[in-house]
Every structure is written in structure tokens, then in C-alpha cells.
Image (cartoon, rainbow, N blue to C red; front, side):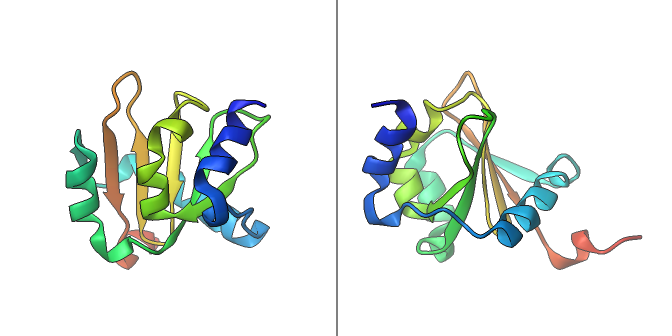
Length: 123
């Protein structure tokens, strides 16, 4: 069993392989992250409080490792199993339509970017 298999087991019924269109939309959002404002979180409890409205929303998980496919899960399942997921790579993004979360290796801190419609429009 490898680390990816352990992630699948840890996420259980919340583990999904997303459709390619959503993956591509999320990938395009990741390209914007360096231009967005962000908040860093050192405590998972603070992160959960901040993102409570997204608790049951699915997020795509992008890992900087070509051998690991993009997968998705509900946000709080991701947070509850964050250490299993962060073991996959030192560069991980969790993305949905309006939030980007980036791991900050070598710490276990996470950076949250909020994506607003106005930021998606071309100048």
C-alpha cells in the first residue's frame, strides 16, 4: 500500500475522482493565486472556523506529483485528514470555485486565497 492508497482509505466515502471539466476550471484558478490576497492559518481549528460555510463543499486536491491523480473530497474531510494528504507532496493545492488553499511546506501552515468574481474578469 502506498501513501495515495492510505489517503483514499482515510477519506473513505468522501474520496472522489472529479470530472475533467471541473479539474480544468480549478487548474485555471490556481494560476491566479499569486495575484490574490490571502490569510495564513497555523491552527486547523482556526481554518475550520474561517471556512465553516464551505464545510460540505467538495474541493479538488492537486498534488505536485505526476503519479498521483487529482482527486476531490469534502473540505472538512480534507482538513480532518490533512496530514495524510500533505504526505503526498510538499506542494499541495485544495481548490473549489471560490477558495484556494495552499500548503506552506516545510510548516504545516495553510494559506487561504478567496476568489471573487471581480478578480476573474479581465481588465
